[in-house]
Image 1 (spheres, rainbow, N blue to C red):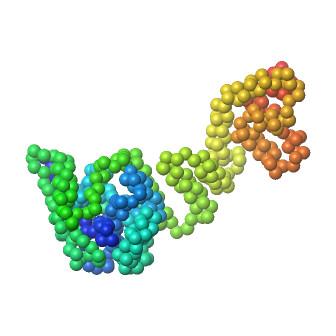
Image 2: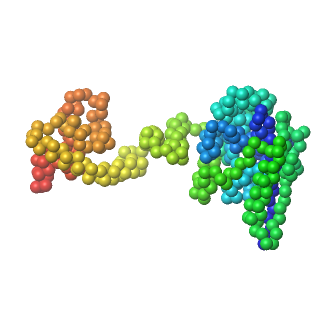
Image 3: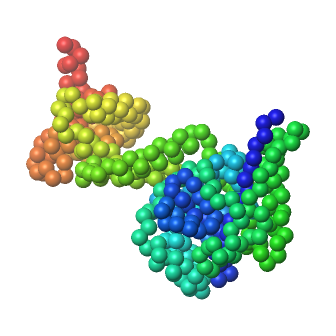
Length: 399
């Protein structure tokens, strides 16, 4: 069978009061190491394990991914997607989604001041302030980094790290080859179990908690969401490379992203959608004739179908009205009141804006022309109410 080597890395930890926060150094965009780089030739950013930061807070474990994503939008956190042959001591991650959330030092402070007690906030200030000062000019983090390389393979030593720091003294790099009677998958799972057991038995040198991501409610990333993540990551890089974005274009993009944000969170927000569609129509209609705009044609077709499907509902409203007012059929309310009672608001809005009868129109104009709006609504919905509609309809049929 195929032999596969699995590298199990032991992360050092940063001490802050009672917390021990595991960390690593992001080197470039596709590699990491656990010891501080000896040179400054390649940018190396210290990143801190999100699960350790959120340990013993009021945030429920199943809500951690949502919080991580929120901080990632602000460039304070990132998801490191590791190659399948990399594993970490005490962290059990599904093989199909070998990724972990990490925070930059700016994100550490933000988490502390939003979720920690005052005493813990003070501990973070005391232990991270020197690092924060040295990283004050760091750029925002990308939402995702695909990591395929570990540059150092030797166990980290306290002298190699920023202070204060501790080290889990188990071996930090183990190569395991599968035997003929075991598959590589079984070996990985056995190794993960072994690392969890050995970490939990270390007494004072163990972490506050081991993290078993296999038991979280967060679903394993499917192929569909993998494609979505890659697309969003690609768009983020494209924006970074774009030197100039038109103000109107930027507003449109932001409105669309606001709605996407709500949608991903499982929220159906009609107002957000309305804002996005409105700004999209206003931006893209420029330069197109009303006779040739594909966007307006698509909107008109969709709107017509929606109104057609509402026909049965409108008919029920009209029939109920006729039954209630059978004795007053010659003494009906004003056209505007009648249209408001019987026809959907969207239908009325389309016509009154089309005819220039919006709220800003003069009162006399609305009174004189609103009967036309009512007549159009009666004909379009095949529901005749007023005497004028009956007379005109009979006249049209005869011709």
